[in-house]
Length: 393
Ligand code: HMG
Image 1: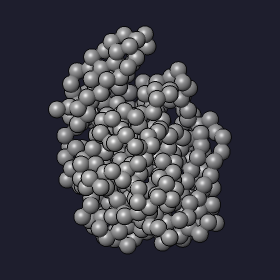
Image 2 (image 1 turned 90 degrees about the vertical axis):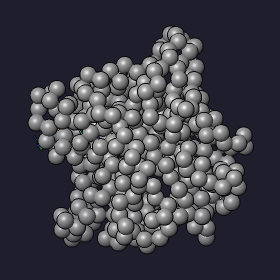
Image 3 (image 1 turned 30 degrees about the vertical axis):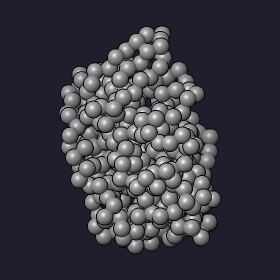
């Protein structure tokens, strides 16, 4: 059977950083509600010339540049997963394909199911590589999470993109065959077409998340999955890091795993490093957690990792894989650290202006964006409902 896994990756996030302590100050509440209660410290804020397309292309470009010409030509599928799409019809993948200058003979499309979309792309990619082991599939999970100002969701915003190269010559992680699935119709979080921000029932969303995780885990076990305690670390979808802790505790109790609180924490906490300061990046969030893990843990070779991918509405998939010894030479910790550290801090007023005043003309009028991003690609403007993208150089 062909081994299929992650060969390389890329990561991008918004160029500005907003501290949740400043949101707490605006609200006149104790900042520990955010720092401790939901386990979040800050979130990334996109500039006016950043959107899900520029984040996606920026995440993928350095990785593409690292490939040999043959390996580059072997990318015949590009899947962009997002739930904050910029068009109801044309796929964000077409814009990303153009910016990355991939050849014409590529299948490029967008995929959606709330935060689960990145994992839907991954499952699709594995099917394509199983049928064509000489091909590579580029998947990019990219999102900017937006809730109404002064709503309880405001603290759980953020944005990022993670690009993954899926192939039959993995260097970072080899996927197991077992996959656990669970779907139910729930109105916990959704975004009707006319809205730019999500509708959410926060309490219900937490309950559905946990219910779906237990159901998907049982299905994973029933399909030959690894025992819970064999998993060195689990990467959960992280709308906020405390959500992963809550679900992990419930899952351990459900399985009567007998682990101590510190065992459970050790299985999880290393995945929080980036999410705590990037915020919810919807489809990308679980993969941001994975990068935070592999870029900072040196003892993962041969270890089994679990993945718990939840998307509201609701769908959950549990899967697993084994870390390959070559991950130590393939990770890009310095580049990620430099990108995260380069984010400029913004005050409350600037954050609000960037987050809610971004260009979104609804009458075909023209809008030129100031050049503010520090990412390789930018949204130069919008004119007659057409988005114009450019390189930042
Ligand atoms: P809230 O209702 O304002 O917060 O919003 P709260 O009152 O429940 O407090 C949060 C926690 O902080 C509580 O802990 C408090 O006790 C604690 P808990 O009881 O839950 O363990 N707390 C404090 N701790 C220390 N010191 C203090 C303090 N004060 C309070 N001083 C909520 C919370 C998550 C509901 C809100 O942020 C929200 O609606 N977020 C958006 C929805 C969401 O993220 N849901 C998660 C599951 S659904 C999901 O993951 C899918 C999603 O990513 C979308 C998709 O799939 O596309 C959202």
